[in-house]
Structures are given as structure tokens and as C-alpha cells.
Image 1 (spheres, rainbow, N blue to C red):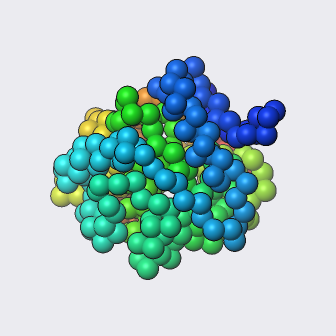
Image 2: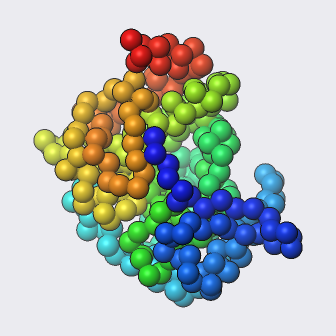
Length: 295
């Protein structure tokens, strides 16, 4: 798996403030106002602890406009390329098209549907913490918005990806149940190999998953459906049958459109296959699969 250097780490500076370290090729790296704003938004949740109130981000008109641009671009693409379950869940969740929602607003809409709540994180959450929280019906989300110069692109998960992608997906009740199984599996496993394997299976399913509907590939993955480029391009990938062993070992590069994706025969197969896998997954499962892969 090629992660690159695009995810921006967050740390406390020598002066005590919170600083987001943007990569040299990040769209906002040369914009001092954007960098100041990223630090400000990261500081809201840097010291947040479970039980604390979810911090409110007072979004600017520029940030709301970025949300509106992406919303308007994705709408027609979803109608053409998203699976039925995603479209039905999106309609039920009914996110606002005209403004960046607060995380509390997302929770108020999502919790009655699937029981999930959105919690704040300053940057990319550690995998064990991020996935493990699913067991409690919690989803850690960033609060920042991508740079306004490239509203249809982000090199890292922003609130648009976390909400337009994952919240709509979590409004599919059987998918939310599988998320919980992911969290329970993470709390069982101890080795980093097992965590990486699980992360890759999740990547090729709930981030970049595809199903066949009426003879056509339709997307359900949050990584696809939160990106106009990915949504328009995913059908051109090599589509392979669902195979958790291959999904957990196949190399991928987050900086390019995915050349290989895995397509289930239906959303029912996604729930059954992925649910069964995560429900029984442990360190021994990973060890056994990795041994088989090297034979």
C-alpha cells in the first residue's frame, strides 16, 4: 500500500498552538490564510475527550461555497453511478445542500437511522482508534474543508468525504451493522499485521466498494461517492469478484484512481460476506491468510 506523504499530521507547536503540517504539494500549502484556518479548526478538537461537547466550527462563506460546489457536482453523478441502497439512504438522511453541517447536526440526522454518532478529530485518526470506535457506533470525523482553489479534489479526508461519503453510507442500516463488526474485530486483534489487513479489506469494500445492479457496476464505497473524479472513473477499473483474501493483500496507491476494484453481486452479498468475515476475524485469521499468500 502506497500512502505517500499527503495526509497532514497535526501536532502542538513549540509556542503551544496546534499546527497542521501540510505537504509540499498540498493545494493550500502556499496560502497563509488557509493554513491559519486549518490550525484553527484542528485546535477545536485536538484536546477533545469522549464525553466533552462536540466543538462547533463556525464555517466561513468560502467553506460553505466549497460544500455547495461539491454537492451540486456529485448529485447527478450519484444518480447515475451510486447503488440503490446508497441513493435511498442519502434521501433518508437528507443532508443540507447549502451549508457545511456541524458534526452534531450529522449525528441528529444519522442516529435515529442507524445509531451512529459523529465525533471530532483534529487530523487523521490512528487506525486502531478510528476503526475501534465503530463498535460503539461512533465515527471520528475531521472538521476542515478542502482548499477552495480545488473544490473537487482533496489529498486527505475532509468533512466532505467524511459526511457526503461515510454518513450517507452509514444511513444504510445493514452497512452500519457491518461497521460495528469491524470495530469489534479491531478490539479483538493485537498485531499490526492484522490491523493492516483489516484496513485494506475495509478500503476495498466500504471505501471503494462496487456492486452489480441490473447488469451495471454501481458504487457504494464512500471513497468513490465523495469524489466526482472517482465516481466518474470507477467503472473503468478492472472489476474482480469479492475476495477478502485478495482485498487484504493487494497493493494500492491512494494518489491515483484505483485500477482494480472488487464488485459484489448485490448489496446483500456485501453484508453477508463482509459481515461474516469481520465477525470472525482475529489475529489467527490474518496469520493464516498471509501464510497462504506467500506459498
